[in-house]
Length: 231
Ligand code: CA
Image (cartoon, rainbow, N blue to C red; front, side):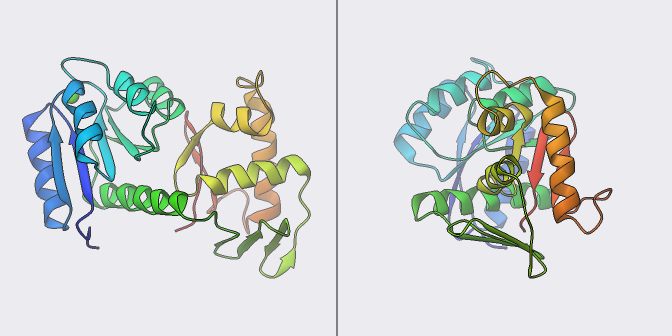
């Protein structure tokens, strides 16, 4: 796929990784902006208007998490975090602070383009009207009518199941942390009630998936959260 001149800000202090990302993105038609420190990254977001930010969390001058915190005070530009393997806590914190998705090193170029494409699409959608009908495979959700069908058949969801589904749809193709889901679906104070979430995800899978034991729609992101697959 072609980047169509969309500009990506790459925030990375390792020269080799930066070179790899630059070459790969330019070859796909993206315009690449670069920053090697957190301070430069924040300035670039403010003054150079990137459409997507690829952010390494381990930077020489400041924690990448603080970059997210600062940028989210005034910008909705999608942020895809690049994290080292085994840094689950950082990944979850980054998402809770407002990052949109993450890539775990080492990652393939296919995965990189997919994450960027999803982020760009969501940014466009957020700027225009909310989507009224969501379709993924056999599943159709009409938000205006609050109607859920699978293969044309109406499915009854409880209020909470529906709210969980809508929350996942809002973040379709991106990971949503356990904490975010518990907060949005159950409310403040429920952020650590993981068993509730597991039960409801199981119920949704039984109602929406052809084979609930091998989900193709409502995917588990181990240790982090869930991702609703729309692509
Ligand atoms: Ca680094």
